[in-house]
Length: 327
Length: 270
Image (cartoon, rainbow over the protein chains, first blue to last red):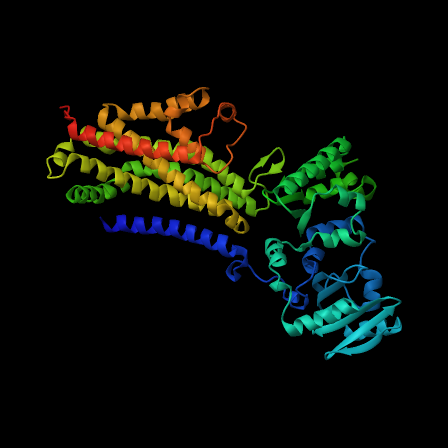
């Protein structure tokens, strides 16, 4: 056997063994759980407790500087999030906030506890002054200054846990976040949630979690919830730049439930197509809908290129389109 | 017996290098490279955020696309075509090149020559086709779904290896017995087998594809007329029955080929 024959056998055999070895490791250990194949998401997850029901992320900087945002600014030159917010807190959303992580923590019967972690550049003194003006008080919790705003049974708190990191939410949630950081047992240890995070973290806006966190507390209309087959987890992700590409993925309880869900979604899309008729905007949106998934997974993707944004905007709000087309 | 196998292994070593670096390998590389290239394109398209394949507006997942490629490229085309081209050539090439005299005048039994060449064919084709299938799998299937697709992948690799072995043995017999084996092989693989699978009745039982396709863990792609007809008349044999008949065909064809080579007198045309 010549040297090049031996080399060929070695390479071909190596590819086969490497492929089968990777597959074997994946099926016994779960490939996405290997640190090599996935990151632990944004660093702020270190503050989110392991039992969080929903985790969401928005890269505010990318969204605010996106082509899509510029397009909306052209269409609505007067509208902007910065007016009152910037005046009162000194926060300019276009420049001061990098990204935001949101968590929904298990609460009592009244619902889940919201928690928001914002990374950026904040004027601590101005924000503290504003909270004091609104009747807030300062508390110390494990060495962190908690600015607490109590309004009847509802109470919210804000703390600057690190330079450039603001944590805001229900008092209990903010305290839980501080405890979680100290204990180092956070949501990155939650395999179910992290498997979903690793699937969506390439997007600049995403949310993952237990589906019942959306249905409990009336976040979804009850007649919609009743029509849906049993769903365990969900993952929603969107990539916003020139256009929007959004994906909603649901993990049903079993294959049959997933099949039912696919049928339900197909039915809704078909119904919407019938309703759309000659409505150019809706037809454009529906044409970009893709249904995918196998086994227990159902995924719905909508892609809206930047050129289609004009079409999706009501005619009276797009004067420049009429001018450009000569009408 | 030990001397017989030692001779077969010596022929195997000699033939493997010859087979790998022959002009036929360029053909094999082109045939096997096509699905790999398509998988690379699909991967690039998918990375750009566009669905590489959609059926009735429904995005086809990577695992389903891999299953379709297994059917369309590997099971229905690549395995039979490699079996025909390599299997028929095992003895026929030596006859055509008038080099069979040199082989048969060596102190090696004629049957061992055929066996050695057959094993060389098996290793040569399997080590091109199976890694290509593995590469296509990892290109099409996202990392998150690798675990779900691993068992079907292992089954696919086993089925392809068995298919190459069966077709190779059958066409080695054709090459050892007939004068124009390539034409007969092509007619069998792409004429008889395709026709028999579409016809109602028991004729399909006299094909290798009938048993091989029964083992494939992916759904047969629907839509084309042939697939539709095949699905209508399809009676799928059980996995043990399919394995039994495939191994029976393999052993019987190989034994008959060895017997034919040992008994036949090859007359070289001047």
